[in-house]
Length: 203
Image (cartoon, rainbow, N blue to C red; front, top):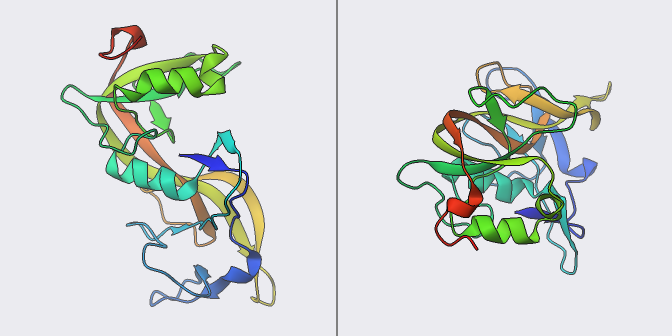
């Protein structure tokens, strides 16, 4: 699910201004494809696959991240991650941030299946460095919004220009017409911490 250094993001000339039936102009692709928008109408960034890149562990591929979050698929193997008793997620306790509150977690990190947790711990450089990652078992997770770059239309309406990055847009509020989504979020409910060594298959 990690991005590759060789993948190319959408170019400005691929984007256009579209006026749908509701009369509110929004960002669109010049040549639309099925699946460009999610169930809430958000436009998603496309990635052009170019072979030969290196894995960027600190960045997520938008298309793969969306697929894993929508289907609750394991971010490592792509198989269903949900199990009887809950779904496993990693969450970070970031330096300087308030203590993690298990009842208020909103994450863009897709889940993992139990056999892939040791694999992730062994290969992800952030986890290997012992950064403050917490493994969670989650009883219920709910899709709640998207994050990405918000674009503004130029004065002549001929093109879109990036205006703000890493913007969160909740599904409970009106959709941002200039949003190009790159991450999908889930709210985690019924959450408890898990010791990775207690999982079946852990070393």
